[in-house]
Image (cartoon, rainbow, N blue to C red; front, top):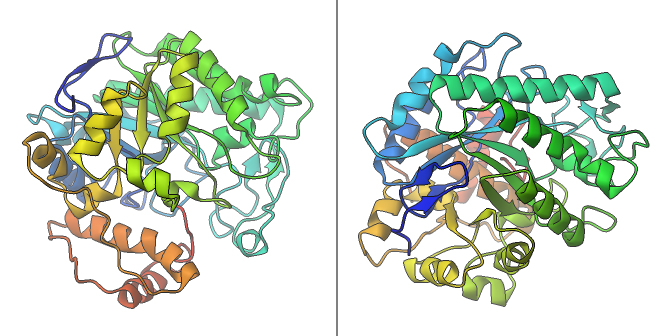
Length: 403
């Protein structure tokens, strides 16, 4: 089933079922535009055989960055700035989709002294709170202005030639902050109960869909849950899935967790490891409330496991992230019938905190090698990677989640 095409609601067709999921690249230039290395990275991935490539989080406001080298959309964007990136997939059969995002309170202090969020709620974890300032609550007018920024960004990338749009509604970023009762404590039209907390996301989908060309697919990346006591629950998430389906969403990618509870970085439950997909159980529940096409990312290791998941009917698309860094040719090899594993080869120190940091840093450094035309260095050691991160990127070296 991996090789079967998939027609989405809007009429666009994915050539097969393997999609490269978003990975924050940190390869924007000093003006937060796509760099030559970023274009080269996506050319390499496109030649590797993915049906579609979803970019790392592109920020809709250059004054609100999650990382220093994020690509970000200015107040008056020019689609020409993004055309080389769009053209990186030319002649390969792959589609390039952009992931749009706003960090909300997850913008570090050295980038945002006063980040904005639905409510002025600081992080509960003392270590994380030392990196991120307490946010300022958005006014109603600012919420409306942010929606317009998302719409403008979507139209800009569509005009530049990108094949699809994804909204990052997971991992504790702004859309996710609106959905969670822990971070959205408003009592106006944008919060107060589950219906009003999901209004921000639904308004984004409605307004972007109304402006996009009819055959440009719109996707959302959504948490199955925050996995935090008092946070966004699975039942609430399933209700969002139902409403997104009613709004005509083309593809829903399932993930989970936040900066404080980073379950999307990997699980150790034996049942999840055995069946490979981290969020397969939730996908089966989502399938019962909506017929929107579903993409699951995380944990897949073999073509057999991927095909088994597709045959189960719980999902339609296989998302691959870090394994695509280790082997940019992975989709082509899987589709060609090779007995190959989707692997994450990150070394370990044996120290839990260090290893959680290393998972991001090692893969990011390897991604930058690929972007520079170099092969992946599978022998790169754990401590060398951590020291390099601390020297080259000290402000981000100690983050456990990226993208």
